[in-house]
Image (cartoon, rainbow, N blue to C red; front, top):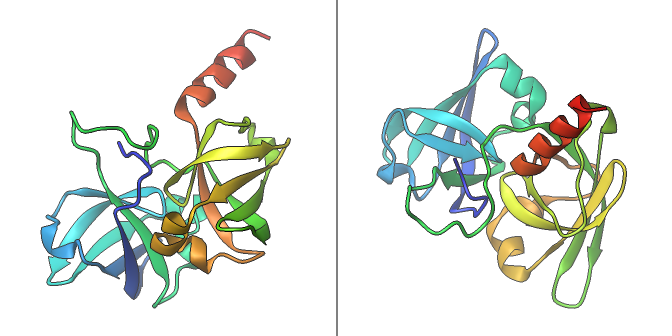
Length: 196
């Protein structure tokens, strides 16, 4: 379980394919605090640490994860949003994030405002995921409040701290991001669906 508050930015140091799996080695300031078997969210995807070596560590993404997320698009040198799992009893500063990506989206607009940025994303509505205005959504693991919501699109506003300390500074039109929709909203939608 995660909160959507990004702890650190990592950088892809090495990518190694093995069958349908991808071993991803990340250079990060938190690497020396990690241990094998620990869960870490990478752009919102919960992965297990399989090796730690100084300021780098390695995780493995299976084929299904690569198909449902943007991790298969990573290249050496790319930044990755990192968050270690939540400690029971800590403050929940973001919202409940499971680390299970629902689908990807594409950035369709980036607007610079006075002191902030507005990003718009478009996703495939056939998967029955929804956003609501002032609701929560996780974009590459970042807990955000939806500003505008449409049938298959939404916008979020980004403050300078988030811009500087997450992958948002790298996004441009066409960037692919991971989405995890609000878990409570997903259960409500499923319940309503089953009663129609």
